Image 1 (cartoon, rainbow, N blue to C red):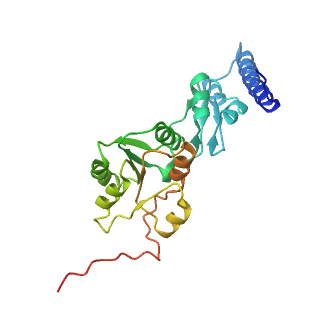
Image 2 (image 1 turned 180 degrees about the horizontal axis):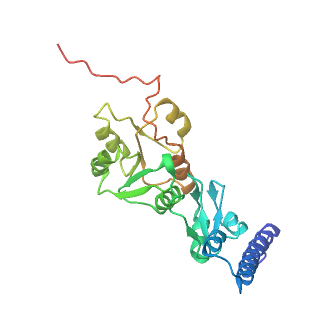
Image 3 (image 1 turned 30 degrees about the vertical axis):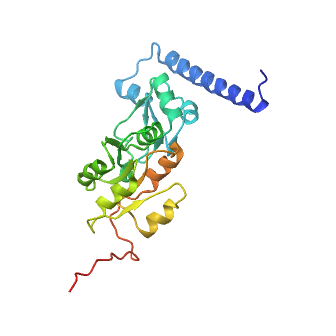
Length: 230
């Protein structure tokens, strides 16, 4: 089996990154032996502040976070490789800084796919299980006061139809071909309904980051009401 030069370079970089983390951890442990330091300074040296908004394995390894507590900026997203690094190297995340902030919301799904679960975990969103497309609409209603909702169901049009019976809710059916940024600008939906299947992790993660918590109605938005028959 032949290995391409690019694969060899990637492997070498990963090994070097791991060795760098081990050297930093070993040096920190050695410098601490016999040192007469107070508990306050010891606690401070155990914490690492990261300013990146996307926390990958490379970021964590480069910052020497193995065995230490990491403070994240509000809205930071931890990728799957970053979470795997956290588990393997016993990195602790400061819960007060790990929140996603204004983008936090809930995903209601009738069958949570791995991509949905990974996107929810990386963006700080919760997942609520629904029994069907109609049940997703029922479970969505009490969640609207807490943040934005993504309904991932087998029949997103059914979920959207039930939720759109109230003019107070702006509900959109979204496909992978739609421009999310343009949709948010034109409609700023409270709920986005999409089909459970077919979405990639990166697409779902981008969606959770682009949905706005602001309840402001776009100026161009105008509800249409059916006139009562005479």
